[in-house]
Every structure is written in structure tokens, then in C-alpha cells.
Image 1 (cartoon, rainbow, N blue to C red):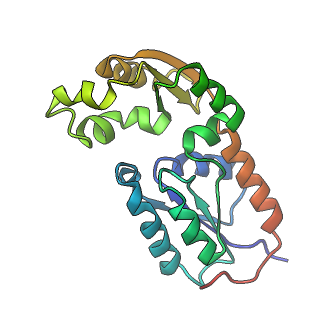
Image 2 (spheres, helix red, strand yellow):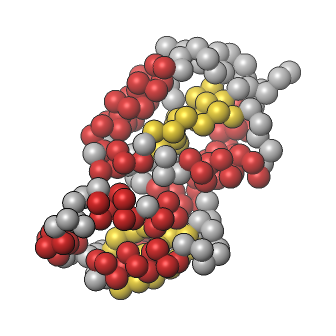
Amino acid sequence: MQPAQLLIIACGAIAREISAVARSNGWNNIKISQIPAELHNRPELIPGAVEQRLLDFAGEYDQVFIGFADCGTGGQLDRVLKKYQAQRLQGAHCYEFYAGSEAFAKLAEAELGTFYLTDYLAKHFEQLIMQGMGLRDKPKLIPLVFGHYKKLVYMAQNESRQLDHYAEAAAQSLGLEYEKVITGYGQMAADLRQYIQHNETKVVKWQH
């Protein structure tokens, strides 16, 4: 029996990591369709963007998986996914599924005023945060937006120091204490493995 052809509709901020997990597991039956990571500045637009992508690919793949957490949609994304019987990654956001719910809860409890970065966000901090939120043009907004934060925690998916200077510079730009925590791919990789193992022999076309 041929393996099911799987579509993963993923946030652009984690598509590279999903691809790395797929390669490391030898999953050759996967197509990743990215949704722009910039939508995290407008989370209310994420459910509609995911639904449109579901409609765009309806009937083309055996299975579909959503590479998003709730991502600030307040449950609206789950309402869309329920309609299409699609499953997503566990957790409220990528910080939680990278660190794991228990570890993230401890980090949050240790300092409520924490701003988090992943590999993607560290690398694209200038584009997504400083420019995307208008902070580069209006630096006086920084204390208004980030005044309640005390620490920046960089959750690194890669153990190398390649992106450290981006994360350290981000903390300096915001005037925050800096900490690095190596998480790897965390619960995201486990969720994908579980989904693949459960669906690898299914060949019923997904459609709406």
C-alpha cells in the first residue's frame, strides 16, 4: 500500500523546522504550503488564511495537517479546523510547543514579563518586530509596547550559536535581560510523528 500523500499548511515561521523534521524521519510524501509569518502581527487574519488554503488544496491530498498552534486567534482557528476535520499542533503558540507545556509554564511563572524569540523570530526580528510594528521609525513606542517586559528568552531550535547575535541584539534593542534556552523541535516534532504514524496507511482523499 502506498503511503498517504500529506499536505501540511504551516506558518512560515516554522516551515523550515517542519521540513527538517520531515527530512530527518525520511518522510518523502509531504508537501508544505506556507502562510506568511507576518500574519502573527494580525492573528485575527490567520483563520481565514488557513481556511482559504484548505479550500485551495481540497481533494488534492490524502491527508492535511495544520502547522499552527492557536497563535493568538482566541479559538477561531480551531473553529475553522473543526469544520474541515483538520488537526493542528498542540499548544497556544510556538513557544509552548517548542519548549513543551510544562517547561514553558515554568519559564512564564519565573518571569511573567518575558518576551520570547524562536530561531525564525531571532533572524527576522528587525523585519517583523522593529519594522513590522513601526518601532524603528518611532523608537519612542518601544517603552510603551515593551515597558511591561523584563526579559527576552531566546528559545533556540538549533544548538549552534549562529543566531545568538540576532537574539542578543534584539534584547539590547528592547532594553531587556537576555537568556537562551535550547529547546530543539520539542512537542512539534512529537506531534508530527504521532500524526504521520497514525495516518501513514490511509489513502482516502481529504476534501471538503
